[in-house]
Image (cartoon, rainbow, N blue to C red; front, side, top):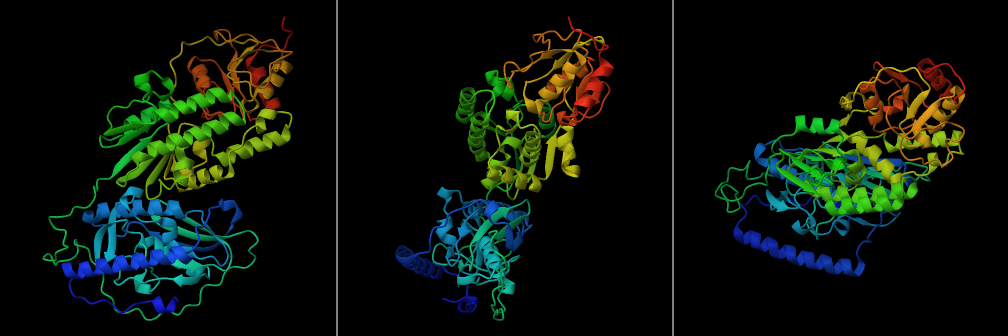
Length: 590
C-alpha cells in the first residue's frame, strides 16, 4: 500500500449516522481488527528497543503542535483527557530506535488504548463526528509522527487520512494521519538508524527524529506530491452540532470528564522555606504528596504542615526502604548515592498517582524531577521545582574540575549520576516554568524564572563578638565542604578548630591541629565554611542569628549581609586573609 494511494479517500456521505449504520461500522471494524491481528502474527513489524539520547546528536526532523486546540469550557475535560492520553503514548514511544530499513508501527508500540492501561476519554473522529472515546486524541500524535517522518525522508509504508477536517489539525494540508486500533495504523521506515523523541512541554506536543553521530549528511525530505485536498466538511462535536435529535447526541446523557483544574504539591524534605511557601500558595482543592506523614510520626525530616488540602497521599513503604538502604550504604560514597537515587525514584513514581488528568500544575521536589520527567508525567502541565541543590550537570562539572586539580582527594570523585539522569534533569529544568529556592547561587542560574525565598533564620541566643583563635567548621569533614582549605588556613594562622559532623576524609585528617569536641559556641571567633558545594547552610544561619561572624563561599547560598564575609571556593589565600581579620595575631597554641 503506497502513500499516494492512501492520501485521501473519497469524502464520506453526509447522511446522518443511525443505529444501524453504527452497528454495520462496528461489525466491519471487528473483521478488520481480526484480519490485521492475523497478519501481524505472521509478518508484523518488529518491537523496537530504546536507547539513550547521547548516541543520537543530530536532529533530522521536528514537529510541534499545540496541546490546547479547543478553548470551549464544555470541552475542557476532553482536552485534559487528550493530553493525558498523549502523555501515556509518548512514554511508550520516547527513546525508540528505528534501525535503517526497519518498519516502525504506532500500534505495535502503543498497544490497545484502553482504560486498564491508563487511557481516559478524549475526542476522536468516528463516522464523521467528534465523539468521546477512551484513548481519544492520539491522532495528534500520529499527525506529528507523519510530519516528522516526511521531513526525515522516511518511506511511508502505511498512512490513512481523516474523513473530516479536525479543527486545529493538519488535515486541511493533507499532512495528517489517522489511527484506529488496530487496523488503521501509521507505519514508516527510515533509510538510516533514527531515535524517536516524543515529549510534551507545557503547551506543545514535540516529536523529533534524531540520527547517530556517524550520520554525515542530512536526510532529504520525502518527494510526495499531495493530491488536491477535497472540500471536506469540518468535524463537529455535540457541543458545536445542532442536530440534537441524533441518537448519539450527548445532551443530557453524557458528561465530559471532571474539568476542574487542580494543583499538586509533591514534597520531599520539609525545608522551613518551602513550608512557608506552601502555606501561602495552597488552595482548598489542592493535593499533597509526601514520603511520610512526618508530623504525625514525629519525624522532623518529613514534618510538613499537611492541613488544608483536599487530598493527601504518601509512600511509606518506599520511604522506609530508602531509610533502610541508606543505613546499609554508609555515610559517604557511590553506594550511598546509588541507593538514594533508586529509592527516591520509587517514591516519586508512587506519588505520581496524584497526577490525574485534571491536574494542570505541579510543584515538586527537585529529587523527583528527573524521574517524573522521564516517565512523561509532567508534560502538558505548569511545573514549579523546589530546588535544593545545583543542577546535576553543573554540580558534577564543578566536582570534576576540583578532582582534576586535586586527584589525591578521593571524595571529590566518588560518585557521578548516570548520564540519562543528568540529561533528564537538565531537560526538565529547561522546560520548568518556575524555580523556587532560598539558595542565592541556585536562584541566580535561572534569572526571571527564579522565585527567591528568604532563608528562615533560626532562633539563637546572641553571643558577644570575640577576637580569638577558635573557629567552628560546620562539616562534615569532606573535601566538597572545604575541609582542606580550612585545615590549611587554620594551620597557617595557628587556630583551634571545632569540627562538626562526621569525619569522612579519614581519621587523621586534622593531625597537627588542635581540635576541640563539638560543644558550646561561646568564645568562637567565626564559623567558617569554604565549601565547593553546600545545600543547606543551617549552621551558618544559626551563627549569623547569634551575631557570630561567618566566612563562607557563594556556594553556601547566602546573599551578602552584615556579619558574612564571602571568599571564593579553593582560594586559601583569601580565606587566610578573612580569618586573620577576625582572629588574634598569630601565636603558638599551647
